[in-house]
Amino acid sequence: MKDEEKQDNLDYGKNNELVGELEYEEEIFTVITDNNYKEVIFDFCEIIFRNSIFETVDTGSDVIHSFMLDLSRLLEQLPRPYTIVQEFYHIDPSYRDTYYTYFSNQHFQVRRYSRRLSFFAEIMSEEDFFVQDEERQKRIAEHFMGACVINPLTTGVIGRTLINPLYVLNPTILPVYVRLSKFELNVYGKKFYVNAFPYRMQDEETMRCAEVSLLNLLEYYANSYHDYKSVVPSEILENEQKHSHERVLPSRGISYPILTKVLSEFGFSPRLYNLSSIDKYSLSQITQEDELKRCLHYYIESGIPVALNLLPVGNSGSGHSMVCIGHGSPNAALMKRAKRNKWISWENKEHCHPLINSADFYETYVVVDDNQPVYQVKPFRHLSMYPDMRVENIAVPLYKRMFLDASDAAAIVRSVLHHEQFGIDVWSDKFLLEREDVIIRLFMASSRSLKNFRSNTIKNVYAKEAYVIVPMPRFVWVCELYRESDYEELKAFGEIVIDATSAFGRGHSVCSLILMHYPKVIGIRYPEQTNPEIDEMVELEDDELFDGYQRNLCKIKT
Image (cartoon, rainbow, N blue to C red):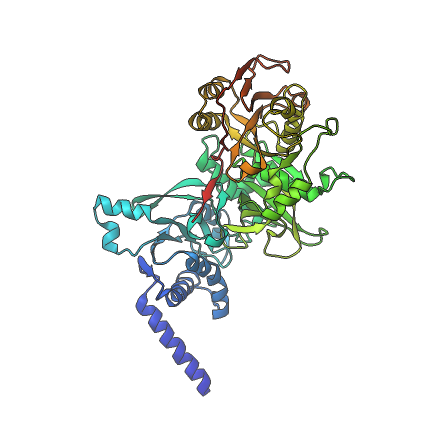
């Protein structure tokens, strides 16, 4: 044996001995600090992957390091100091389902137990965690950051991950606005809660990126709403098989038309938007991509996570799928551009108030992409980690009674705002300057939440009463109206509310209008009113600017 090889083996033995002394694979509690994080994270990941995941697999150190990279990046992102609590024989429902469906049928053995790592934003000992001290347990629960499942696979080792984005997002890009759900986790018999959106990696055998997007979406909706049930991967594959012309295992991925079919099987009424099918107007500066981004923004502002299908420019090559759950802050340059692209009613161009679409103010969106670390904030035109990829399809998992989609709602809003009877030019003439620009903010909201928010934030008693008493369907489309000077503080001077259960054919004649609130006046329509007439109109003497609705998304800030 050469001297160099002997030395390499000696060094490897020393490193292994050092790691073995630490016994990370058997340690329940591991503390990460600023002083030790580089060494501990490397050793921690290496020993877990080498001894627990790949014990029966002949792998070189380069392979191990590539598998370690995703986990180590997550551990380095978390704010230090923190404590990792390990569960060695964790049963993860989604992995265990794929194990019995697929991996248990393979010739070479694949382990059935996962390992789960839970993270706490403080230094904690075993005694601290298990002691029966109410105050101490409350403090531990307050410092719970989330958890990450490690699956015993050679691809897609990071399984179900639930992390509060506050702990992993770069403070320099905050604030961002995201849709989260409150998940309950039990760690060694103790109950913890985390506001998060599900994340996991594809294993490339039972699940590809589109199936992962589906699983993440379905888990979010099942955890958030009683209308939907919890789903495991085999159920997705079973429904995928109904609409596929060949076998679905091993997975080769699915198209977005089939993805929306699967969503339908689980109780949704999905809407699929395609870039090339969007109308293109020769005299407009708004491109098809701009319109697709607007459509995406309306749904994200509504708190509806959606699946995005990205394809290479020119459609040559394989595509990718991810989930969009939020957006960043307004961009000053885009706000100037949006002002140049304002919408003007051609019939009333001489005296109407031009409409500036607030959806054009935003450049960055928050995505959950299995190819990247959790919660990526990226520009709309560069959401993927790969260059020259653009959003080609958007799949929106709508509730079964949300008949009015975003593009039709936007058309109705424009029709109402420039209507000769209900329009902004009629009712805001004394409030706005002549031909003053108006910013519109369009989103969907549950009527119960909207009524509650308005009754708690609007000061005028008669306005409160109007919002509360007017009957509304379960969901409504809302368009808030702002002057340019008031948008940054989200102080609206008016809004219109339209029926989300209506259809564009009727709605275009403003028959879907439920409520109009302009300066000093509020009007409401009851369900029996089939003609475009207001049932009750109330003058508001002391009407003031009111807060923009802010319950669809959670603001993550420093």
